[in-house]
Image 1 (cartoon, rainbow, N blue to C red):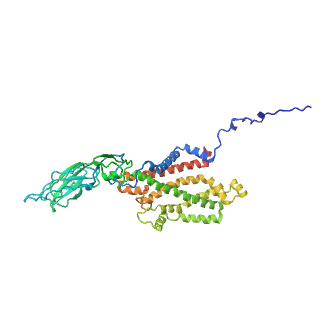
Image 2 (image 1 turned 135 degrees about the vertical axis):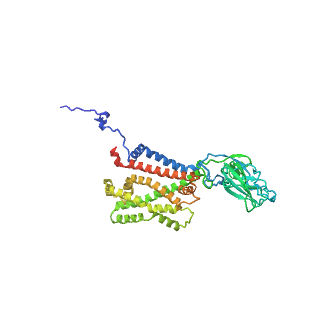
Image 3 (image 1 turned 45 degrees about the vertical axis):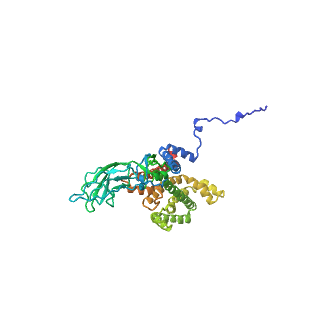
Length: 463
């Protein structure tokens, strides 16, 4: 029987085509984190929260580079002003340059009563820096009383705010510099003989124009020519009770609030990872002792220790206690994350890959931080996103009650505490910092909710 030889080619070694459609690979292999990211992107609410968190961080870090107004600069002419996009202002001379108007004291003719003032006039321009009034002398007057109202007086009992009085009868002028705003005021001047006041006075309606003095203009680097018009900076969020820009203070306050809100959770969750990892891996007596210590820390009152830390660091009333607050959050908040990590490691420490690594000679710390902890990073990240808003809210609450950040250092909680005093007259001082606190807490909570769904492996089997 003859033997036959066969010639083999490369085509004979090509993979066979799949027999059925079911054997084809229709989806590329994805890692755990790639699959979690795809699941997170499908959650529009969580993805929007992620973008919002990024926007808040950019607002905090890059905002002061674009909005260059000094958050400590006080403009007493812009006290508690609402949001504005800038306005023109008249440059006027400094208030101390006016010597006033004087005249002769006139005797009161016998049998006559004290009369009303006449020729009440404004000297120069009426501005938000000052309104200079002068009038004619009234016979028998020893001094004159000046009142200001924001509406036309209906009667002698409705003259408004008493601004002051002249000291001598020859003084026939008065300069009003008390919290003037660009609006119309009604001034009334009444003569007095020292015992009684005149039955009537003279009222003058005055409309003030926004202005700055030559000294203020030079401090801001503007042209200081009297009579010139300059453009004042915008205040999109208004100004506070000291005339400071609220937007600049919110940017600076965000650094304090987010610093505490992000650094504190990172620190106490890192402590919880190490603590819980050791408890969960070794178990036994060590686990029992360490977890009883964690239970004891949970029982400690946070506010009491916050007060003790402030006293221990020598921080008195009115001083900012950023470091004691950070220390109290770190030392008293780690047990919850330690319990979480311990529970997760107890579930996976008996897995085959852990046993294989142990048989190959891996040490305990290597197993904990190389195999066990990375496999519980999903729950840890979710815990972190929920811990950040908790820390931000805690800082805001402590600053609100005066136990955290104190003026002049800005934080969202401290600004809310300041704004509540003027809530009725200037609500923007409270609404803007409270809005940023609510927005940040909501964004991190929604992001944490989305991460929990994206990182939960049990939900994959349901889709």
